[in-house]
Image 1 (spheres, rainbow, N blue to C red):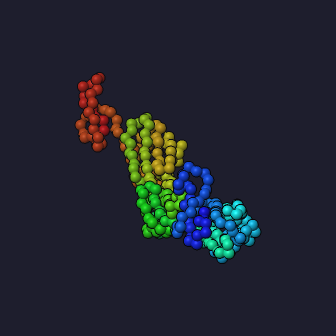
Image 2 (spheres, rainbow, N blue to C red):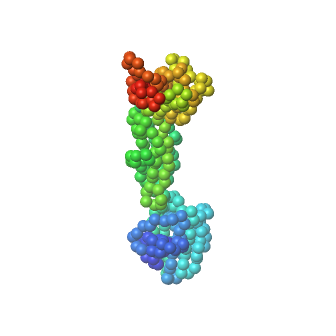
Image 3 (cartoon, rainbow, N blue to C red):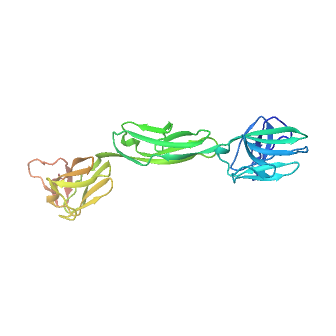
Length: 330
């Protein structure tokens, strides 16, 4: 800091960083009746253009240096220059406790003089405490906390990353949460001193399975076929297949069961007549279960129609080159 020589008026400073942004040095120029914001290290300059007999630096009422003698026990406070025209000190690693009034006091020709500056310390916003990841059942209430500190006092905003929903304040309260509200939430804090600070919290919402898609099949004998069953659930659903209330085992009777995270496929590698019929897909987790019926539908055999009515739902008329008779595939 610079102090105007011989002036009893409080002086404050403007960092050289404001005037010369590309500079790597930190010097301060003094102007009356102003306050400043500081980085982590500052120099306190006191230039004097008159012959002095006594000189001292004070923080509030505490003497830091009296002439060449150090009174402060703080190792961060160091004397930079002590000469007839300059009396300067440096404070390293400035923190919020250094904020306050600093006075350069000197005496010339038996007349006391002081010059003062008020040091304002700004601290970047940072998150010091945030809720851990949360796992709840659908319909529960969720409360998240994001505690931030800084000077000036920082703002805190919660944001859901999936849809951009925002809420201001340290606490985020979600009543009767549903599965659409699951996902990552970001806490953002800022106070204009430095770049913002942010942290994430993951909310997992458990819910029972719901089957979203199924696929029947209409294969011919000897062909490959599959039945598909898709379900959404958290935790992920476990799938089971049944035929006539009997649970099916993968690898038996020409069947293969392929389970993935959200779907299960019942694969028939060589369809026979005993494979036709109704099947049940059961999806379950710790919160419940859901089942749906699927069909492996018999397509019928090709042959001449000699009276009677086809009993199947689908008809296909074709011509047989070796016979003029009309046949149907049901």
